Length: 290
Ligand code: OGA
Ligand code: MN
Image 1: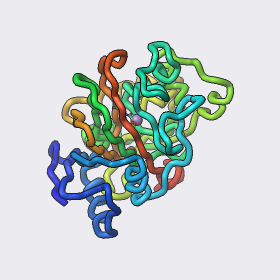
Image 2 (image 1 turned 135 degrees about the horizontal axis):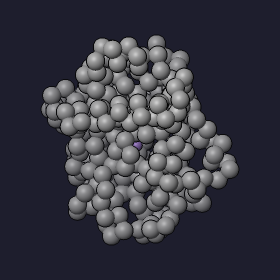
Image 3 (image 1 turned 90 degrees about the horizontal axis):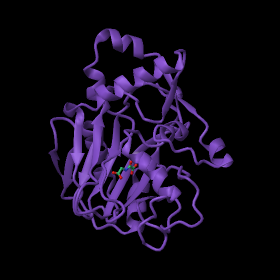
Image 4 (image 1 turned 90 degrees about the vertical axis):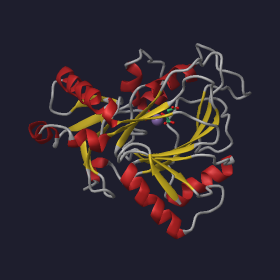
């Protein structure tokens, strides 16, 4: 396993490992150490089938149980736990401009941490690039450990006890999307999460930020939300960012406990972009973690 840092201390490229076959216990231990150190890991040239992608994810821990996306009549992908991060319809054609899935998926352009809106949020996400548009469509990652480290001591003290409510309804509202069914409104009811958490692997403190935040407990709503905007702006400055330019068969894994990410735009009415995501579940709500 060859580990090449992509920026000093955030993001690493790992080669000399074949994710299409089961990893040994020793390889998994070493890999988790790399994830703890670098938070984002790029594995170039991994021509995984869907089954192999699922098997790799399962070998690292328990999967998230249900995909939190707007309900669709029919899934394009065979695995119910695989999230379709594409602009494609079930028949492989490009989604219509006014398709509800397209509008919902545009929310991925906002900085977020996956499933921060679930009571138990996501641990790792693993995104596999199958079809890449010729231009644009990068994915950016922000280091929430570095962002925490650079705050003033006063602000750190102020932030430490805060709890925020996260919901898909809040992040989509930022884009003017409110086409949720009654059932989805219930399923996406806001969930509380700590604003500051300690990563159990690296022991580093991190900001747990996401565009899914809509309320800071104990603060008037606008005061809470300007604070969150300020923090997201701080945490997404150049010095904290790794930008990934996709190649076919890249597998990119990130640790949602200590990063945010967002998709970058591309011409999604003209070009296909087919990405497939597997997601692991964290151990508990951040409120129940040390
Ligand atoms: C995701 C996501 C961003 C992208 O897969 O969770 O936010 O660039 N993807 O597609
Ligand atoms: Mn995401």
